[in-house]
Image 1 (spheres, rainbow, N blue to C red):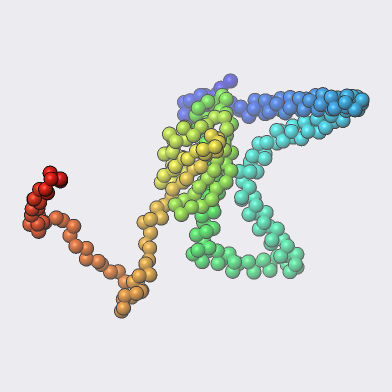
Image 2: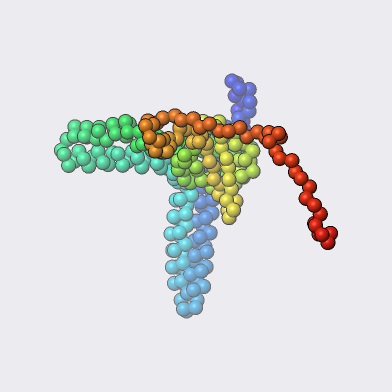
Length: 281
């Protein structure tokens, strides 16, 4: 069943999350029974060798039921676990900040003593190397979220009824040019499609260029290099100017480079050598 969007004039699917939820619950229930029956059979086989097949089947069935219950819980709450993984960096920072401030307030006996952290926050904002490092990690978090939105759009554009599985964004770290992200692809995307859509990924990540590199060992492991700036265009100060007597530390010097042209008048004339005896050349 679909619903027409009057503003865009397109057909969009209705709520497919309910269908996906029913499928997930069905898979979880099937996993539970498969593990329980398999554990019972394995336990009965092991117990038969010890002349206690009934006890072995009971123990194996109990172990299979426990494993099946754990797998069912994981499969049921997987969307929540995936959301926690996507926001793990932000949740870790917030939880750490709250824990530190709460512990500090418990030691000092008042929340007003938390203002002692203001110089630390000021150092993060005012000290340029620290600020650049913090901003680089903030951009890593932003790129992870932008890639997640971009991948979801690619999968929905391919198939709106059965969109497939979104990739897992593993790690992200800053580089001199931008960010580097490792992604584990699943059903719905491949590296060829990502290489054809690097311009779209760059637009989604607010970057100038994006390069996609695949792993030589695993086809699902992909490295995405996001280029946000060109580190070669920055001014590089050389210490050689300090070796010049009387020159300032940051003096700009010019070097006279001789012309590299070729003057034919200065080329000596080639004189033919006389032939050697015996016909040798």
